[in-house]
Image 1 (cartoon, rainbow, N blue to C red):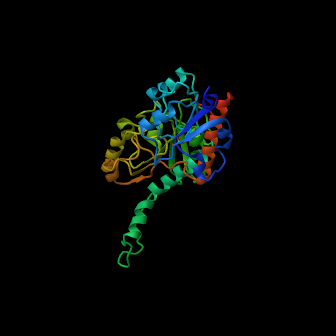
Image 2: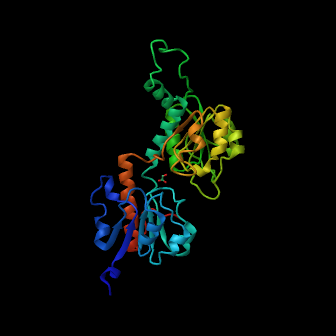
Image 3: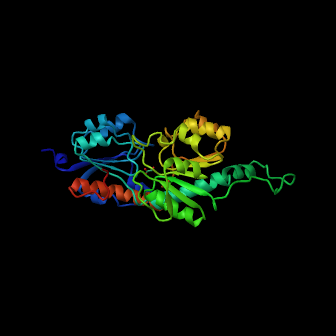
Length: 327
Ligand code: GLV
């Protein structure tokens, strides 16, 4: 028997040790052959298919499309471990049919993502990117010095924040918003009460909230949840923030609402299609703060995510329960 066949095989679409975490792969490498993609960016689809085809375990990122046909082409695959909380890039039904375990990395990124949400709320409300450009472009001059009406924004304190989704990240945002003196209302399908948050219908939330922040996973049910009707139903002058998944918010409807002035501003960290195309109308939309999907991007959190993704994979390949499994 080929000695390689006696060992489990792993294909990793990224190097988890590259995040300043040397040695985190060692326990896995002691039991498995670990093949690591070291090209720039994610592996192209054909390369992913080829390198994963003989693997028992797959360590991947949200940029890897793990669809039914890829799964079919991996007859030995037993565990998929993604270094992400979202798993909308994985065909969970196809994985489930084959009894493949799927792991993700919730929990460790909650506070970091909530921090970014507040940063984006403040950036949009207080026009921080615009203020930065104003100074850099030399528009702050002795002829136009401090002025009572310069770059006026809106306050968080005293405003109502509407949270669409009250999972761990939504709750972490609520804690921060309460500290900023906001009233917090929230909608969640389960209707589960959350301390400090008034539970409301989605309709009521959209009518009342000065800020709306999205915190649901992208599923068939939440795709387009904030569509043209919902955006039209938002309070005039409201601000929308999305750090969840782009597909939840209808981008053309949002762009139209910003252009018409129905919404005061918005901030997006996530997009229906990523990376955002150079010709995306969003780039020309006024009062829109953009970020390149960096919700969990702090050094410590990315290290914890990498470690958890490796632990999930090792557990699954050993036949132990995953630290965090999906479904
Ligand atoms: C980030 O979006 C993640 O799903 O971890």
